[in-house]
Image 1 (cartoon, rainbow, N blue to C red):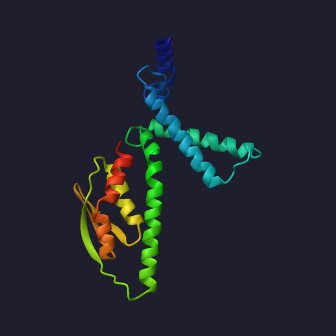
Image 2: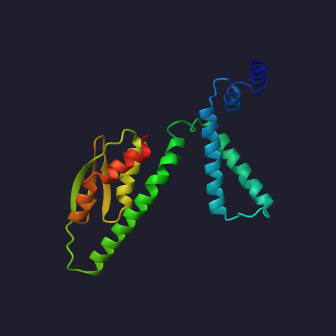
Length: 193
């Protein structure tokens, strides 16, 4: 039955068209890929809800248009082959929940430290550039680590190469904190499981 539907679909769609529909109906399409498409749709719709501000069912037309636009985005992403393991990492969503609160607390502590140094001129500011080793295996996790360093006030990632991240730190304490490897371990533990 599935083969018959595929052959009919190929004859009606023509060459090169309806590839997402073919991919969705083929037997080689695994449940993991289905989950990626569903996760991408749910994530897109959640972002749409957040940005639109229409949370009520009284706006059924607007909600329907949001659902249709998110479905269209998922369809286009499937046609462009960008819904893959690297682009949509479902396991990342589970583990990021552990990392985000820790990062938020680190940002708050660094904000307080930088504000104290600005308001009290007697506190030392000793800018320095340091190299930090990253233990992440994937490019995505390395970029998340570098961005986490930049998000923390008092430190900025300047360069990211295969082994090191070049970081500008506002103080010796900030440089020591980055070089201690705590953030590196947390990124690796939370995002590469």
